[in-house]
Length: 223
Image (cartoon, rainbow, N blue to C red; front, side):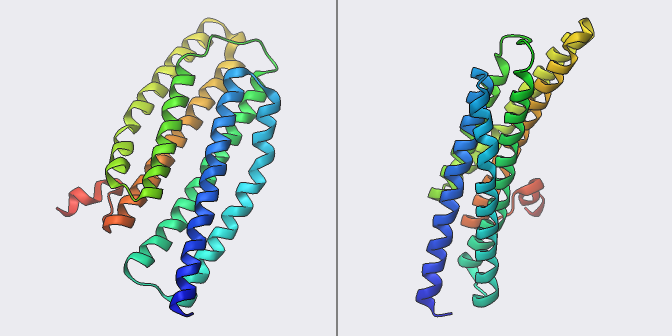
């Protein structure tokens, strides 16, 4: 594969990843709005749009594998393709979490609102910001922003624990609330997972730019 063609294919790969970023950000935004506004039509849009994300994930994966097989890239190009493979997979999984939230929303719409949604929208806002910043870190190769996103994960975990404890109290006091409470607990879990995936993307950004692995604190263990 000539170098010029290889560079064009790398550019094409980057463009496809940016398209994936746009679709996933849109899915998360719609899923959260559907939950907060109790909008069934919007939730259904999120579910229907998932096929587009899935097909694009396969297209990006095939492009990465073709570049690895035909060009045998080195150094930064190899790290970019390896990171693209992992980030592509994380983005698809974030899309799946958006679908999960939309499905829980449709279930919740069948029953009266259990309680005013306060902590879950707050958690959703934090998770959305983590996703946006993780993707901005990738686009701009910004390792400082990537590390900042990683440090926010504990706040999401703490909020999720708080939501779980509160909803557990509802279930213990009134068994009739169990179904709605479980759906809201699952929404919290999905948002927590989105934050985890944002952290994964940031770890890949740091690897892409610096060639350093920080997953599982491996960077500290090597020092």
